[in-house]
Length: 99
Image (cartoon, rainbow, N blue to C red; front, side, top):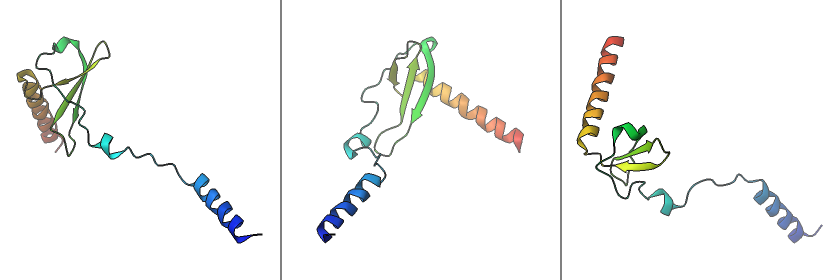
């Protein structure tokens, strides 16, 4: 068998059996999820809250509303600050009880 044909066959075999790369392009990785935030979101419309902290972006709060829409909430909103404070206190109390 010709060496060139054998080399091409080996190369094609390696390429077809190598694992697929699943990493996102750098331009997508470095983008912040929240480009703008809302100061007023009725709490009764919120289904769940997610907190994101990525190296290149500020602290981000994403609320999923009951209509399945996702919005970014300003982390400095007064009710959200109180919510976070209460959640931290609750965690601290539960840790003290378990020790």
